[in-house]
Image (tube, rainbow, N blue to C red; front, side):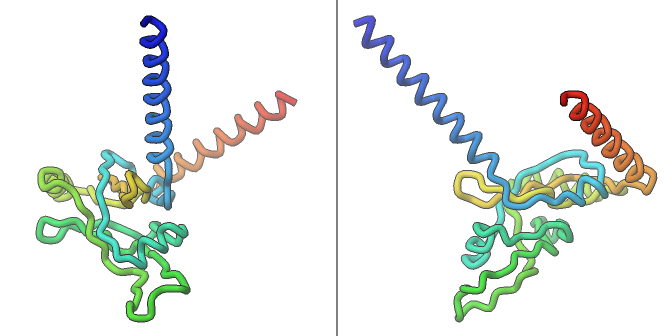
Amino acid sequence: MATKEASSSKKSAAASSGKTSAKAAAAAVRIADNKKATFNYQIEERFEAGMVLEGWEVKSVREGKVQLTDGYVVIRNGELFLIGCQINPLGTASTHVRPDAVRTKKLLMHKDEIRRLIGKVEQKGFTLVPLNMHWKAGKVKCEIGLAKGKGEHDKRNTIKDREGKREVERVMKSRNR
C-alpha cells in the first residue's frame, strides 16, 4: 500500500510540474513588442486587456504580421480602443472581406479597471500605450501601460545606461576568453 501512495504522489508531482511548465510556456508566447514605448515613456503600471479581432486579423497575428510602435490607447464612452496598431493582412485573405490594416480595435477590461484608468489618465501627463501583444489560453491579449512621457534628458540617460551595460558585457566576454 505504501508503494501505491508513493507512486501516486510521484505521478501527481509530475503532472503538476508539467502543468506549470505548460502555463509558463503559454505565457511566454509573445507576438509583438513595442520597444519604443519603454524608450519614450516611463511605465508606471501595466494592465492586460483582451482584444476584439476579426478572423483575418487572428490569422495575421498567428503569422506575426503585427506592428505596435505607432499605437496608442484612447478611452471613449467608458471603453478602451487601440488606435494605430497595424495588423497587415495575409495575401490569402478572403475575397468577401476588405481588410483594413489600421482598424481601431476594442480592448476588453473590467469596468472597475477602466474607471481607475480614466482617473489616472485625467491626471496631468499620463497616457496609455500598448507594450506588447501575446497569446494567453488561446486568446490574443494586449499589455497596456499607464505611462508618463520622458523628457529628452531622460532618454539620454537611458541610452547612456544601455551603452554602459554593453561595455561591461563586452569586457566580461573578452575576460572569459
